[in-house]
Length: 261
Image (tube, rainbow, N blue to C red; front, side, top):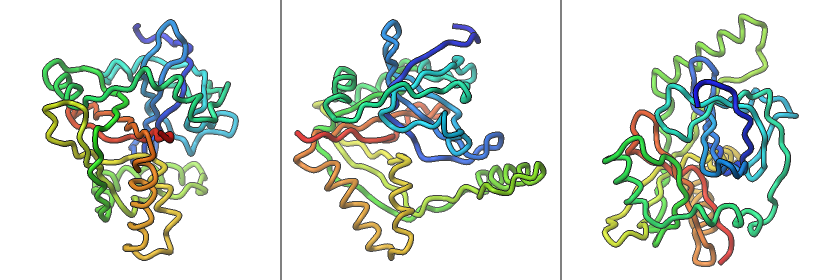
């Protein structure tokens, strides 16, 4: 595909939590399904500095967007693209679970084990997927350790750069209060269980709305929504999962699809 610009169209399914970036300040990994049918399949957009997007270019989960992008040259994963943020245009939105399922169902699998085997034995293999767990054993919510010294240095440097240009309106990216990890078993007969971190931006936004709550109450509220609410017996829960470019055997839960059964 080279380094040429391509005009793409996609249904956005995932916005991962922001992470510090030396160049972009805070970057978000966005993922979804291509809706330009001549090349259907998963795609990842990175880097996206969502807070830097102007209103006409902003988009939400389950929006359909059109945009220009180049294949990500420094990322071996074939789903990865570098978007031109100023070209993003929202052209539709899927409001109901039924509308969303029409696009998502054909991409849902049941074996996380097979996905892991592929990236271990034949990298780079598929790096994004939708997995329907056979059984969800629970969620663990712990205190976030804060940014590493390297991450904090990136934030400090970026804020200093903004100050040089007179932009003092942007606050430094704060570390989340909590981190979470799902425990589940996939549909593979040989599955011994998976433990995967939850890095959905909505999880970070939810805990920030609980800033006045004590830790125990906040954890209980998060567990009520992210386990009992989204993964209850009355839900047909699917995990959107994705891996890391540098550690392709490490997958995280990027978001959830949870229509009623």
